[in-house]
Structure formats: C-alpha cells, structure tokens
Length: 526
Image 1 (tube, one colour):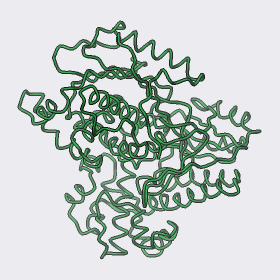
Image 2 (image 1 turned 30 degrees about the horizontal axis):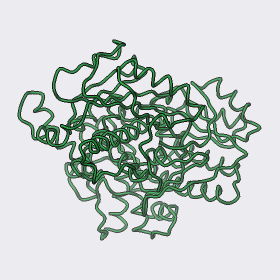
Image 3 (image 1 turned 60 degrees about the vertical axis):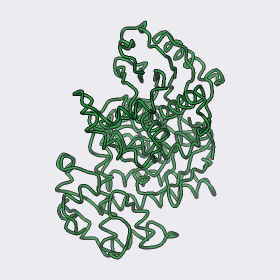
Image 4 (image 1 turned 120 degrees about the vertical axis):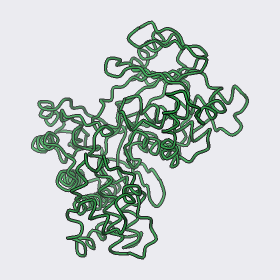
C-alpha cells in the first residue's frame, strides 16, 4: 500500500505542469488575498474494461489520465474581500469559521461558502451542485476522524441530520450545534480553489476527483490544526491511499450516487505507466497492470453530457441488479443467510451458489437454465411478492423511494436478466483482459474484448447512447482494434485501442464528429 503524503506545492517540479500550476496559484492569491499552502492534484480516469460491475464486487481495470483537477488550499483566521467581485463576497459577518469553495470557471461553477458544521451532508442528494462533491470529501473526513464514524455509517448519519438542518434554518436548538462547538471550533477558515481541465459529466470521473481531492485537503487541515494545538498524537501525517479510496467511495454516496469504488481507487492509487486492476472481493486490492507498448489509447467525447447524480439511469441500474441478486439467491438458495438488502452483490451470490473459485459465467449458466422467465421483466410489486416482503419494506431495504421508482420507470419494468447477464459476462471479460496483458499482450484480442463490452453495455445494460454507438462505429471503421463507452454511459466518452501506426488516421476521423478527441497514457494518481 502506498501513502498519500502532505506535500508542499513548492516541491512539485513536473515541467509539463509548471505553467498551469503557476497560473492557478497566482489566480488563487489574487482572488483571495492569501498565500497557497498546498496544491492537491486529483486526476481523471478512463475505464478500459469493467463498467457497472464494481458495485457488485467484481474487479475492474481503469487507468488515470493526464487531465486533472487542481485544488489550492489555504487556511486563514479572517476572510478578505476578493479582488475579483465575480467570485462573491468572502468577508464573514460572524465569529464562526467557514469553508469557502471557489472555481476558476466562475461563470459555470459559482462560489459556495458555509460555516463549518457536521450538518452539511444531510441534503447533498437533493439539489445537485458542483460544490457538493467538494463538501462530500470535507464532510466525510470530518465525520470519520472527529466523530469516529466508520465511512459506511456516514451516509446514514447524514440522513439522520435532516431534521437538525431544518431546525437550524428556523432558529431551533439543534444537537449538531453542540458537536460543531466541541469538535470544529479550532478550525480556521478553509479556502479551496478548484481548477480543472477535466470536462464535467463526460464519464472521466471529474466528480470523484473532486471528492478525493477535497478529502486529502481536509486531512491536511486536520493534521495542521491538531499539530498547532498539540493534539496530533492520534493523527497520522500520511494517508493510506487504498483506505482513503474505500472511504471516498462511501463519502460520495452523500450526493445520491451509489457507485462501487472504482473511480476513487484508480484516482488515489494509480502509478504512471500502469493501468490498475482493482479488486473489491474477497478483499480490496489494487495491482499494477502492464499494457501493450505497441498501442495508444484515444478518448473521444460523443457530444452528449451525462450528470449521473442529477439523473436516474445510474442508480436505476444499481437497484435493478441488486434486486436481481436478491431474487436469484432467494429462488436458488432460500436457506442462505445473506441479507437480502442493498448490501447484496452478484459476487456474493456467485460465491454462495457456485463457490468462490468459480467464474461468473458459471452462475449465469445456472440462472439462464433455471430462472429465464422469473427474471425477464417484472414490476417492483412482483419482485416484492417473490421476495416475500411488502412494498414499503422492500423500498426501505434497498434504500430507494416511491418517487424514484415512479420517475425512473422501475415501478413497472425491471429487466433483471439482461442486467445480470452484463455484470456476470463483463466480470469474465475483465479477467481475460488482465490475463492477456500479463501473458501474450495480444492487442487484437484486447480490442475484441472492449468491443464486446460495448455491445453488452448497449444491448444488455442499455446505458449507451446513439452518439456513443456512432463514435464506436467510426473508430472501428477507421482501424481501431477495439472501442467502448467508458464510465457510466448515456453520454460522455468512448475509449479506443489503436495500433500506434493507425493512431493519426483514427484520431482524424473521430475529431470530425466528436466534441474532442485526445491521446492518453497511464498517469499517476493523487
């Protein structure tokens, strides 16, 4: 396991980043009137293969890319008037200290300021704002380190604070005020300034990069605060990258997306020159993977953006496949003691039904043989009936709501077999991809697996988009060995595997129709 250490920005010497870094630092200091103390770099990522399976415990194979988010961090006892009024009034009118979040692209991403509090996590999933991802990392670290909550408990804790938050707005007494006074009174004003060359809502993980960068920044602030008050005995000045990745995946649930941890893992553990094989079961582990040297990777945007926290598609697929897992286990092993709730995964079902050393395709064969009709298309009430629980209980067990079921369309149509088929077959494709990279390195076979993956995401998971499908077709026709959507889907980007000699031709064809196309190679993490 590697550690993320609190590195002063002056030690960043990569000449390729120097111009951008210098500009960001000057802009920050001009706007805030304070000196930068730290700069955190949090990269984007592409997933080479294995989308929509991490939240079922199956391994994935992403890599970090050059595009990144930079977060400048400063703490101060008093906020100053900004020199650029477009960034809002930074002066404070109370004695309480604040978190101030600014963005270099102020027109699209306005400034947000809030008092330090444990109550901020309560409503992050209701109105979707860019700075909510920053607050996720901030809130998660404060709650975990100061309140000693497990990362998995923080979402439930935040929901319990909803009434408390409403009480604050009407002047009522709120228990969280006591917690704030006890634990947060020593914090200074925290100023975070975000600069990004990662396009948002493009499937390149800009949101998770914000969460991870913010979490690192908050760790730094806590360390400095405790050290200055001689209370640092229990706080480690380095952060385990893998443990922080696990935590950040849980923190991000606060905005309402229930992903599995792939994005945070590669953002925080990636090493330059390698892709990452990220395993979640039976234990979390990140392993470097050598990619063939004779190929290049192209990333192309289809022109359609997809903000997954503000839409229903992503969480719809999570819910469908979780319900599928529960129904499969209930039908095929009713005596199982595995909890049939939102924690269930198809990986766990595979272990229960065909054993831990089995392939996912073995489970799929059993499902298609024994349950083809039961899993084709069901309503939510039919699933409730088959699981033997009433509707209200099922909604509670799977962390959903009546509103979500109606608006997403899942109340009347759940495609459990098709969704499960993708997850299980994709798991085997990841295994094959990694094995090829470790043995023959055959780029043609890798390309075939990528294209098969896209077909499954399009046909079984139904998370593609006509513009994505068109880009994949263009890439393959121009000579790419393989191409697939990367990320959640429904828009965003594709990744193409191209032999070096054909890269210019394929890129030229993609640029004719894409919002952008660029070549990338594996980069280091945060």
